[in-house]
Image (cartoon, rainbow, N blue to C red; front, side, top):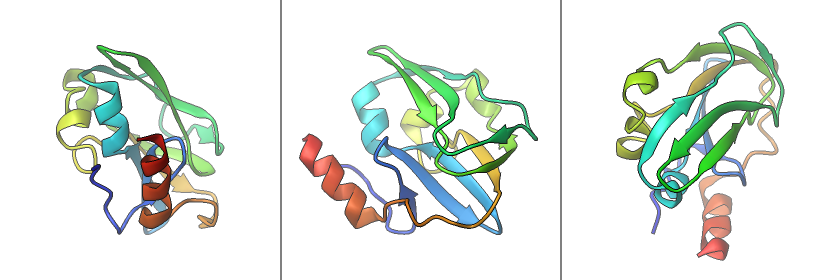
Length: 129
């Protein structure tokens, strides 16, 4: 069973979102990192202040099994990119909901209505299992 924190929001593409003070921190879920296996690269993110829209590719995660695009779950501007992942991409495996975050987006608006809560996301993970 995947770790699905109740205080986060999710996408059906297995990204998680933590919204605090108009900033959305984005990463990939425990389920996603588990499916990918050992992550060897995480990058190709837009520079800070770059405008991003929901559905834009905002990073690439490469693992020993596959490459995966990371999609932006919100509209806004890139506030920060997790530069630690350049040297330590394995943080995504070790701490996907903590130090393994991928980027932060300053929200255009606070509309998160199309994001999933933990229960809704768990149903998607269960269907895939």
